Amino acid sequence: MPKRTLFTNITPLPPEVSREVAVAMLHNHDEMIELNPLVIEHHPIKTPRDAPADEFLDCVWQQLTDSIHYLPGGIVKGKVSYQACFHNLPRGLQTHIYAPMGLDIREKWSICGSLPGEPPEARELGVKVPASGLYLREDGEMRCSRFLTSFVHKNLNNAHKYQRPNNSSPNYPAPWT
View 1 (cartoon, rainbow, N blue to C red):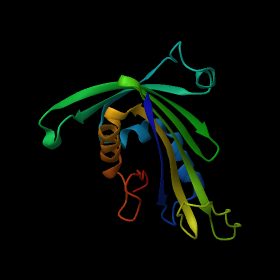
View 2: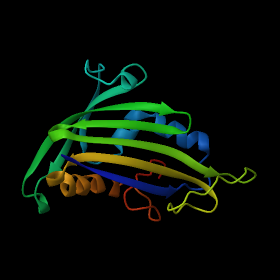
View 3: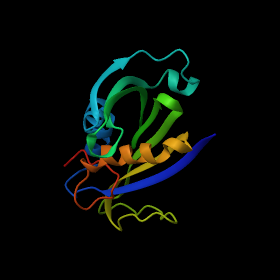
View 4: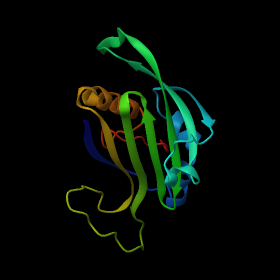
C-alpha cells in the first residue's frame, strides 16, 4: 500500500518581481524543468493513451530523465526516466509525475500574496506566509511505497536545494534568482 506524504513550501518573491512575471515563469515548462539539477534530459511526448481524462486534453506532456545517487556520496549512480504532465492555471501551474515503482507526485505551484494597494489575502491556519508581498507556494502530494519514501523525499530535496534563494524554505525552487 502506498504511503501518502503531503508538503507545502513557501518562498517569498523579491519585491521587483511582478505577479505577471512570476506566473509567466511557471508557465514556461522547459525553464521549470531545466531548473532541476537532477534532470539531464527532457523532451515533449504525446499524451499517453492511459492518461486520466482530466490530463488528456489540457496538459503538456514531457519525458524526463534524472541522474540520481542510489547511495550517499555518489558511490552508486543511475538514471531514471519518467513522464510528467503540466497544466497551466491563471495563477500558477499543476504538475503530475508518473515515475517507476509506483511513484506518483502531484504538485500545484501558485503565486500568492498581495502587492501594495491590493487587499491582503485571507490567512490560512498552519501555513506561515509573508505578511506582505508576493510569494511562491508549492503544495505537493507524493505517493510511493513506504520503502521508497525517504529515498524519494531526499531526492526531491536535492532537486530543489540548488534552486532556492538564501531566505526561502528548504525545498522550493526560485526560478527568478
